[in-house]
Image (cartoon, rainbow, N blue to C red; front, top):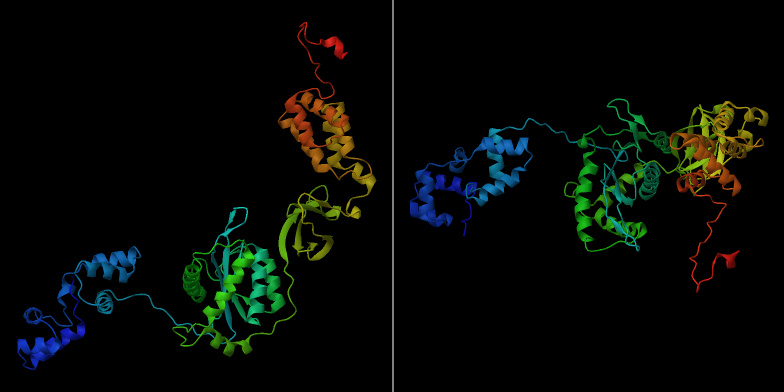
Length: 478
């Protein structure tokens, strides 16, 4: 059994009693030590300045492990204690280390005013097991008021702009107000292009900041100390909450967030080690300094899209029209849950109802050019010319796709048909178009199926039977 290490105070007391003239037996009896232990310390002349164990430690090796490889100093101390090389507690070991290698890092205590700043970050969430058995990962959004350390958190499926901004709206509702400054990380939903002095913020995030009247100051890249409060809060909360619910299985995001918010109330009412009071009590002091909530913000996401030659742009797997004069231009798309707004150089040029299904075309007829101009457009004329080069059936197929009343509606499909020349021969495309027109299947997938199968779909193979006496022959079928 390992002996309990002697503290620095007892070493100091041994030397003091010896200087006072007490005998070896008296010192041992007074301090509750064996005479052998007292003699060992007195014979070797151990003092606080020159501890016997410190002389035998390879401090350079400890420095390399700690500073170069990132091994915590308390882990190194524990390993040396287990080997019996260090007989003192961690505080004494730390003093000996710091005496030899004085730290060059100078830290500064950040002082915050009430209602001044809120730090935001994400971390890995808890996976959800759906009733179907599918496992889906989540992300934990955390926002912390720097003055009171009052914390808001919620799980979401992604860190995309829609989830990111909605988390902000719910966080402000939870706080009952808005801080002056937001300090997020450099994720794309907040910062498009990071820069130490002038970061390029996501337009959707800027619009939210303008609505609430706050300032956005992103943390520097790879500088977690710029938002040290939320970083440390995540470590503490994640370790506690994930341990508490480690045995539970969550079937939906609603169930997971409900459990989270119940534990969040408990977490905010725990006494903070540094503040000497709970986060909730400090928040009551700070609440009146937060800005009042204005009208509820309707979350809008932003995307830059190019208008295609068919007068449509693609957004969220659907296609929305814009004026034909803007073809080839880069347009700003702002989307809510129900509406799509398209802007060019700050002017709204189109408004559409947002579709939830995929592959839908939402078109306003006045966004097309005049019919007589559209019919003679360069792109449709080029497609007709290429179709004539392939063959008659291909030309008829293109004419069906580009009618005179709406010549640009199926422009992409017509372009795709001509693009089949890269994969197949002209005669194969001709055969596919012939069958597609015969069955009125004006789709590229049908044309490709015909080309690949190489079967004549308008004729069925005649059944041939063997000429046996006991079988009915082909004549009975005619």
